[in-house]
Length: 357
Image (cartoon, rainbow, N blue to C red; front, side):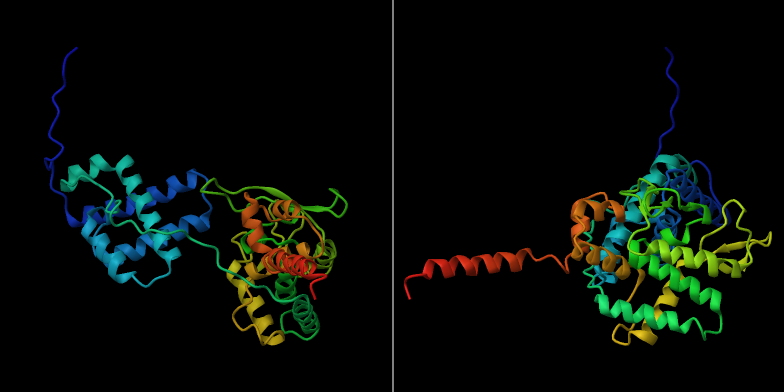
């Protein structure tokens, strides 16, 4: 077997103009996005990673493959020193993933152009530590939620734009009744409502949140807790105001006022639903300014169902959680293990004192 001549990888092979480097950097980022998409990651996850990379690139002032460990030390040790740990961890993970992509796909090309061997600037010495903990969310009471939706419902009779306001109202009701995430609501099609399944009908959630980069996870959500009535009213009395064809494949359950190029309605965005909920909370729940979000409604749903007697396994399946420990963080408001233990301890103490007094 003959041996092939191999050039030293530390040798710069050809000069590259600044314009070529800019074009190459753009192509590399586009390839990164496509690769992550092919891995099944949600668009929102990819946008988040690219956003983190853009911020680091703007601070660094040069291509990310030129980032040294000393640069990472300065960035995370000074600029992001006081930033919440979740942001630091997410940004560090985006950098690590991007450099893994560079090493796997473009190591040779980058060395050929600039003579640099790509290595991740984050190592065991400077990698941000800690775990990203879920934020503690205390949902409104049942009375407050009833007040919110009663006021919002009365507003539909006099609002300037009935269809968008009623759409936002129905979407918020759905999130509070069966705990859907706001992104899951936006991705629902009219055909995803399966009225013939189960006792009340079910929703086919095709774009559920994946675990650890596994991609969208599907599940069936039963229309319990009044969600069937909410959807029947919305579809029969509101959906037709958006002037879309209900027989069109892919017709969104919650359309936008804007149309696609072919005249069909596009999907409502999560920002629109967030703003609608925020405005309603401001008008009808003044004690919750800027605090009532779609995810808080999801926590409210889980807490109320637990309070009404639904077991944790059923709530876990409804919410689409992979781990029961995650579900337990959603029902913290009504769990009484500490209070029950205290009451039992007081009872035992009282029994020990019987006959001594």
